[in-house]
Image (cartoon, rainbow, N blue to C red):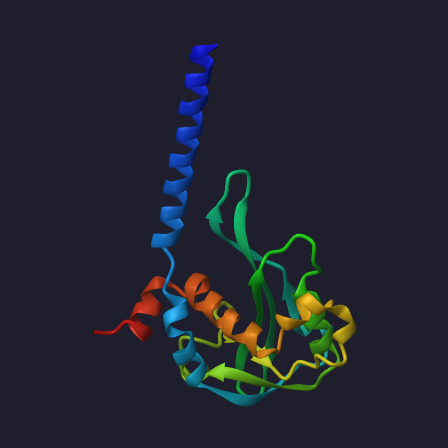
Amino acid sequence: MRKSGIGWFIGVGLVAILLAIGNLIYTCTRNNGEKYAQQYIDESEYVTLHIPEGIKDVTYRAGSIMTGVLMNSTERIRTDSIRFYDSTYKKYFCVFVIEPERRETVRQGMIVVNDIDYRKTIRARINKYELNSPRYGSKENPVPVLDFDYNLQRLRSAYDDKEYEYAFGRPAYYKRAVELYLTYMMSKEEFKERFEKE
């Protein structure tokens, strides 16, 4: 009985150490997005983007990124994307719906794509560097769109009161989405080059 108790404590201790190491790895590989989110927002501007007419020209993809390890699961953020080609800018753009993953809720990305589907244009807030850089705009690396004139009132019934506060298109959502984008989605190299220059 005594040996099994000691073994149990050793097992729990090993699991705790492994979880701590796993979370340390995730912490070391992420960027400090919170620190530079406001700068990213301040360096953004509104532009009109043209949505192609055929549904086959707009690609929706549900995704997620693991951000940490818990006792019996992982922490994730949802990274749903809606990609399209704008013939005026001659670039690909991608609306990212980025939010912490909550099992009990509908994917907000599906609601956002319903808004885009009926529109010919959207007025999007885009970081000026990403809009003008030749590094962005290809099919493989589209210009990210984290905010646009989403018709939240038309789709209000899709959200309950708690979800509505962080609904796509609201200021609290946009700031948090920028933080998550910079922290988990932008490469470390680009983040250093753009925000941590000496």
